[in-house]
Image (cartoon, rainbow, N blue to C red; front, side):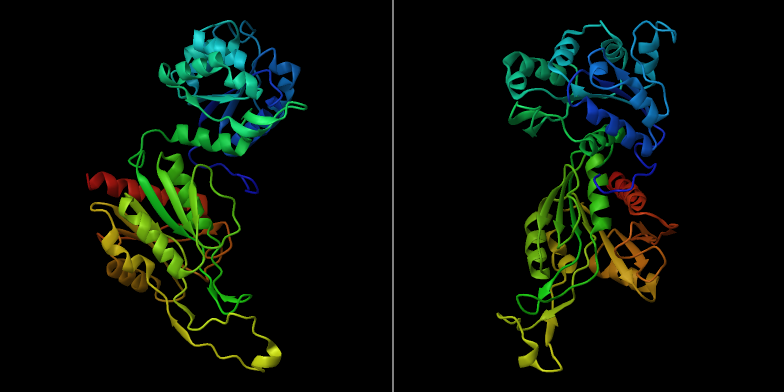
Length: 413
């Protein structure tokens, strides 16, 4: 979530997360991870091994979580602290997970507070490996990871490939970044969902149509709403692809982004991927028109004169023209951005495009529309049901839209 303002929200808000920290140089990243999870509304209990305390101090975690850190198996909080931590956790995440911790967990050892907590919990467990690439590639480490994954159903998250500790070069073994682990924890917290294992296709952002090699006709869509939907769908277990016009946003973790520029490119890309989609969401702002004859050379003011006249021709209707390509039984959602007659125009679009649900909002409403992190929308269903939402963040709106999509998927069987 680089560059994002974090606030309490689903699926982290009100959930209990045990963050195990072991003795690797990546332990410093765990402090940021604990901070981000706390800002998202989670209660984070940090459990530090003796090795972890060589790199980071319990006080650092207490400062960012507002909760006491745990370090000793036998402490004044009671000999059964590991049972309390394990039974109350919604997720246990070990980040970083050293080769030693991975080996001890695979053997079912119970020689410190973290390993005993792993034995006591029945919550999802995420293991985030972090070590030198030679240690990571060792056959015993790989066998231990397979055992954790296959026999114990632990989720192995990472590692990434990149720079390792000083003088250790670069390779596989680097711990994922905190914002990536946050998303993995969110996916674990989301639990069972009708979207799990399903293919979701989302269009997002604007389109651009060239006037000449320098100038274009476009719109102010930022892609924020479509990307928020993509991230939330991935957390619910979906395989997500986003056909995105030109945007300046980080790619959502776990999501495949297919970049396009023009409406015709978006039509071609959607046509290719829509037939396999169980859910399609048309959240992009596709330009209705394009210049009929874009210039191959930059238009010079001295040559064009004081007035420029452009002849525009109609662009393809991406949602309408691909309607026949939708998989039988798939759920399809549209967006309607209006400046007047919001409900009437949205209802007409819902029916003409064959959507199961349409999300309508007025571009001139305070806090809604383009280039902001909030939105105020009305949901209109094909069954005639209408629901007006208050002003919410686009992340919150995305969760509600996906709730409605899940209900539609369940009702269709």
